[in-house]
Image 1 (cartoon, rainbow, N blue to C red):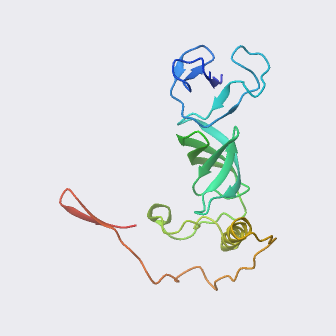
Image 2 (spheres, rainbow, N blue to C red):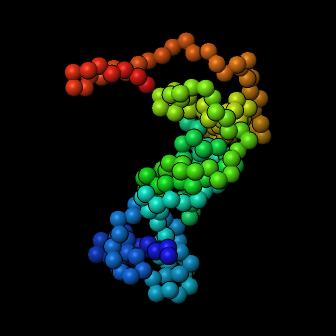
Length: 195
């Protein structure tokens, strides 16, 4: 049984307090979308209740876009959810780790439908170090998303009307870095370094 959480705007002791359908309060986060009914179960207009994404709840999502950092973007119940290591076209289950008013962040639990662009590269620390945001996808998809980000920025900020942006791909995606910065910290008398 799924319990729907709604917000009763203006009627709660504190505006934005969440109530489940049985009247108890719940700590649920803020990302929300309108339900098709109001608190009495009647059909709703734009003033109805809200369904909220719940922290630690698992949802099914279709990845439709990327952030500039390479995170997958999905819409879950009308809310933008950012999911690291996800690829456009993949259907995944995601655990919500943070829910805000207009967005949420989640962690992929399972890939239900895998993208043909997903690859496993041979780097045991790629997901831990943070130096390779696009390491989970093939180079073709990486260059496509980078070209799309440039096109969107030129159209939005530069006032252009570009349909495509040509991109010059590198001959290889290995061994091209010539600079690294290693933060160093001391904890309990030991030195730690890494990305």
